[in-house]
Amino acid sequence: MGQIEDDILEGSRKRILAVDDTAIVLTRIADTLRNDYEVVTVNSGARALKYLSQERPDLILLDIQMPTKDGIETLREMRSRGFHDIPVIMLTGMESKSYVLESAKLGICDYILKPFSSEDLLSRIRRVLEPDQNKFGKDLEDFEKHCKEDGRR
Image (cartoon, rainbow, N blue to C red):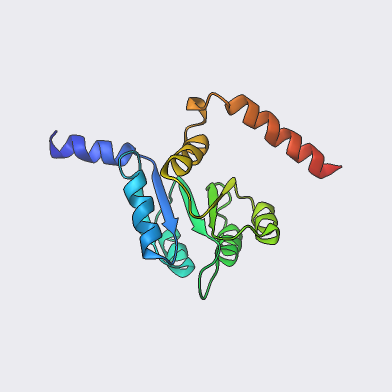
């Protein structure tokens, strides 16, 4: 392909911002996703917020436990800056209900426990970014509606 076609192809791919303080995790995410998505990696919440001031990804993978500004603080600041429509999948190395509940209150669409498989990461991202490709999409919508209704009771 020529340069113009490459640019068009690159521009048409969905962009994912991966935020994690562990280089090996960022490398694994990038290696897993690079064939299907444009992947941008940063190693801190502060760098994620700086990136968001200049660019708008289609999805954010956000580690909960990071030094200085953890994932919850980063997500809270993102939401306060008006980034409500960017889907966020939290990454966590611990199964803490309090972190998951706090993340859910801030509007995450999913969370993934580390270590995760490449297949699990890809399927969860596709569920969010390509809902019409998801044969369970209608069931997921019904489930989300049910969860919202339960939350009002």
